[in-house]
Length: 283
Image 1 (spheres, rainbow, N blue to C red):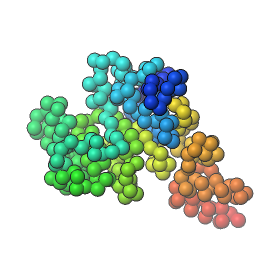
Image 2: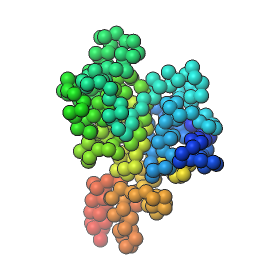
Image 3: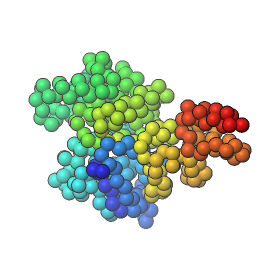
Image 4: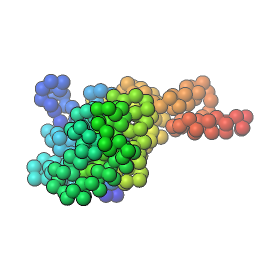
């Protein structure tokens, strides 16, 4: 498969503040992200997941090792512009990314800085707002929107730049359940329908369930990697590093401990109901 991002033996040390001396924020990380993938990176606070995310579009540069974005070395200054057009970033607080007083003007900010024609800018803005379901709000003031709506506008601003990959660093952390659902549905749509490669940094297990691949980080290292089913079936291993599992997976784990012979790789309520019905039918 064609790779978008390839991190090879990456180390990173902040050199002050939280990470001092020999402790590394990233410790010998090697990870490939392929074109069209939806990859979720999990870990508790301080595990290194956000630090890694910022290496994917050269916001941070490795202290050791190399990060390639479409075979462009992030350490090479002359590639930075192309790298940041290839990989867009969405952060936790949408207010930090919204720069204009009208939604459509905010989404147009990036394309305008690319020097595109007014017609191309109009087309990109309208497309981006439709993709995230915010077209009807194009004349609204961003500060009057809900948190989920603001985050969708921030995502539209990145989409309008036409990146091949979007890295989202805990985009739902500040949102209520409704806003979280809006944003996750938008992310899934970008990946499934628009073909955009997605890297989602989160600590919500139910968001990770919907990805193609899960990477779990702990103390700056990759602790586990695999499909959601492979990762979440290892309940005790996840709990050892302070992470929860989806509620349904927790239920299945507890039933298994009580001697019920039930599959350990169940991820959704529907799968759980189906499996329990199957077990009752076979009694």
